[in-house]
Image (cartoon, rainbow, N blue to C red; front, side, top):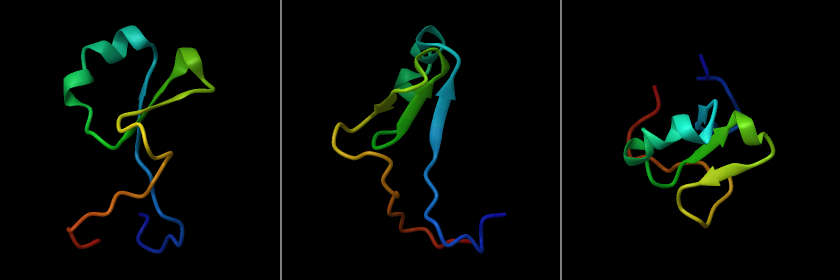
Length: 62
């Protein structure tokens, strides 16, 4: 679906509320971003350094 995209993709996990997010905190990958609908203007960064940065994977793109 995104094979021909020229723009790097960034994956963001989304939750309706912080309360809903709490049950998944141990499963959210480090160096990712989370958006919560009840606070629409804020992203939570699980690394503290980068804002929406492309993840450099060793896996080949399909």
